[in-house]
Image (cartoon, rainbow, N blue to C red; front, side, top):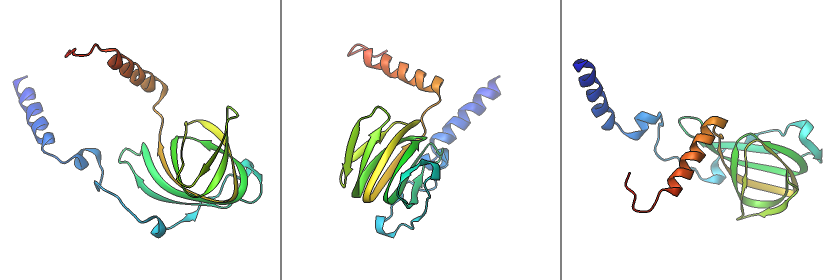
Length: 167
C-alpha cells in the first residue's frame, strides 16, 4: 500500500512539471495564419439541402483542439439558398458579404461583414446568400446529454453559493 502511495505521489509530481501541451496532446500552443493565405478546398453542400441556385462552398481548417471537441475554420459560399444542419455548436464571424438566415423558430437575421452569430448544435437553419459570404466558424461539439445536465447543475449550484462562502 505504501508503495502505491509513493508511486502515485511521484507520478503526480512528474505530471505537474509537464507543459500543458504534453498533457492535452496539443502540438502547438498558438496557431495563426493570414486568412488570405489559407488554402480553400471545395466543400460541397449536401445536394438535398439546396433549395435554389447552385451555391459553391469552400473551406479551410485553421485549427483543431487536441481532444477534437473544438475547431476553427474558414468557409465561403457563392449565391444560393440552402438548408444547413449544425451538428456542433457554431459561432460565426462574417468577414465578407452577407447572408439572410432563417432559424428553426422562424426568426430571420441578416448577418453582414463584422457581425457575429451563434447556432446551437443539432439545429437547422436556412441560408440565403445573394452574392457571396465568407465567415470564420468556431465550432464545439455539444456535451452528451447526461454530461451537459451535470455541467448545468454544477453551474447552477456554483451561482447559488452565498458570497463569502469558502466551502
